[in-house]
Image (cartoon, rainbow, N blue to C red; front, side, top):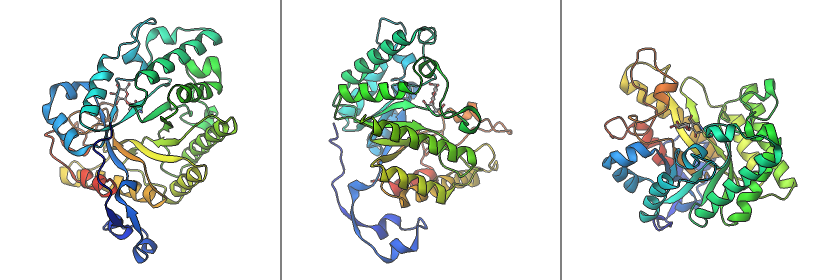
Length: 356
Ligand code: 9MR
């Protein structure tokens, strides 16, 4: 894998930030940076369009340098029954990525959501722990040395830590407590010591008290793992951005700097923009979506290098936003870099400014 790495070419910080309105300090003092220190453009791949839309595969080949199976590595996709692993869908995407020289991001080894019924019915601390370890060992081992980065745990922080405490409730937390995170990272690291292990979560971008509490919860989990000498290499910011919310620039920069100070990498893992409150006019809406992403990406890259910027799908024809955040005028949501006819939108230009 990784055959498609772009040749490192010399860029200046001035050219990297050209046109993105970043801080004047950088613009005044250009320093050489290597192109491969810029983020890679990743795309989360949903099996249905992947199988049925040749144009999707062509665009992936042309533009993506990283591919993340959107659902195919989740428990409900792999574990229809307790005794089996069905790697069919995941293999389709992983093989395609390898054949086309793309890096691969694994999503996800532990989540409170999208578990098969038999998992939700498990009981007993020992049994739950055994199932979790068995799952992670088997999945990480199958893709050992091939999946470069893993969302080891997804959304383990409570939606509102100010209200419910820092931890997300769910089968893993209910039986194992905070230890569920330790077990997941430890197991993944043991099976594939070369994999880069991430914690992934949403609503980390603005500066509301709830978001700040979520950021603190992430930092505490990172420190907890580091105190126990359990490897963790990065934090994934999902970045399901709301066009009507502003990025909390200063707060976001400080959060990223604190993560970097702990030795962690940062990636954007599920980028899309929720446009339900934007005007009906398509051009203005697309501009608003692009501006929202630009504001966020400018802030986060000003705090240091991003490993990946992964878009949660490619075309507006296929996006969870359409159902989950429906517009009052019933128009289709336009959250992604390509429109429903697979034509690039302003959001794609924004992503390209920040990716190699
Ligand atoms: O976009 C995903 C959708 O197709 C699935 O039905 C759903 C349940 O598995 O998950 C969606 O992706 C979620 C991701 O895995 C975690 N962060 C939030 C995403 C949107 O719900």
